[in-house]
Length: 56
Length: 394
Image 1 (tube, each protein chain N blue to C red):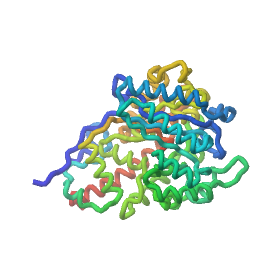
Image 2: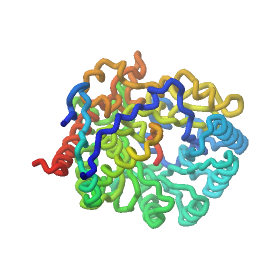
Image 3: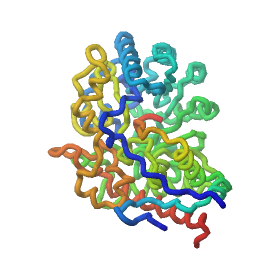
Image 4: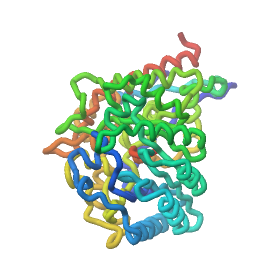
């Protein structure tokens, strides 16, 4: 089901149904890196605290 | 049966919590002076110009008290990880040796088992090979500010007498590119006059682990330079995004873009610039006063003031200061324009200082709301196309 723009107007991108095998085989692009980061965040959730923008 | 992803519950920003989360990031203004005179500097050139007059370094006794207050705060809240940022003005004006001593002092003073990441954010004009070695020895990470190639950088980042900063910064960045152990990355302020692809490529040549594009500060009362009723900043960022995103192999991280992607997937933002995730940050000024995030100086004179300081007050008192609480609970659901916006959960109202308007303070969408929506929708469309391909759809 694509819920990306349904119900509460939530403009999310729906990853439901994407295979982990396909993700692991992606080339080392920015897209692949972002996918893997999402998986890491699901496996190891961290406190939702943001960093100050004026330093790296 | 192959494993597939099920959608995670969207992360809630800390503003949803009843108790403010403790400060985890301590910005220490070790020197309020600077050897550059950048046109857009929020410390000197925007609404609050008090540091233009007071360009002093932090006294040792003030730094000692700041360290003691940080230790007290970490102990009280049982935190085992924190970040100290040596900032200015220009932090290197106190000298690399003193910065190394300060880093050692912070680490030694912390409760047992507490890890403190120490970073400096510098214009890199004075950053020498010896400084880089010293910082590596002391585990101090170095972030640098650069706006692109020579022409782009010299548009704003010059000394008071007009001299270019580019050659000195270029030299320093080439050295840092060889030290991935301490190179934190590059901050770049967007100027619409600069080409976004050229700008990105000028930054990525130094092999930074991360770059970030910062929107020039402005608000509804004093809009940013180049502001119009068209999403020009959003379009600029979208071109830079495409250049970054389309590289066959990821060349660097772009903090702002990666935060948008994470938010679009229902994750959290790691930057206060987007998503309504206010930073758990306190600024300790060179005179020892506690200040709210210093970019609020772009809104009005006094916006950062708490009336509290390291000599007389704990950091917990700053944590409960009404203005600090207000910023950290600044979800935009109360703003009617945002309530009906389809990208509100990703945008989060944008960066807090950019919401300011004389008369009603920060209860507004970002002055960049049009740009943020343009960029978010652009990134979402790119992601949806790639996800569809992954799922085997045309």
